[in-house]
Length: 138
Ligand SMILES: [Zn+2]
Ligand SMILES: [Zn+2]
Image 1 (cartoon, rainbow, N blue to C red):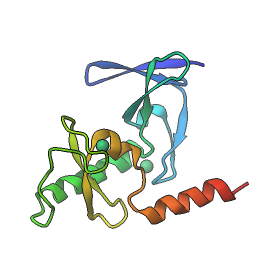
Image 2: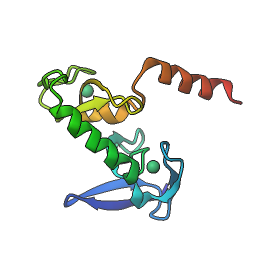
Image 3: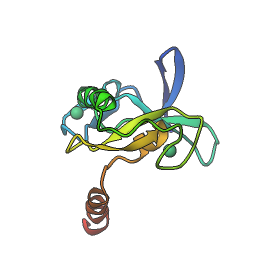
Image 4: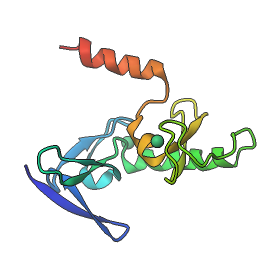
């Protein structure tokens, strides 16, 4: 299995695949080189125990407008005050970010960066729909 190193914020990140890999953004459905996808969460290879990084499923272009929405929500007086723990997994002492509904633009909950990148959908309906797609499409 090939792998390569991406330098991001001065740190080396190990990614499986090759520098020429191309992916389709799950939001705009356009295809880009891996460079166009930011680094997401880490995971441990079960066999080698080596830590690899996943890439985000949204391309940079789609990711940035969402960040703008997130910042606006953080300042919105109707948004509940930021918690010091993740409202998904309950973990403390981690970076907490605002998890918002990518369709409606509404606040969902405060989540750690791991949960926020792991929960790719915002509602149960979207998860069910996605699950149906995986199990029904043969
Ligand atoms: Zn995109
Ligand atoms: Zn969490």
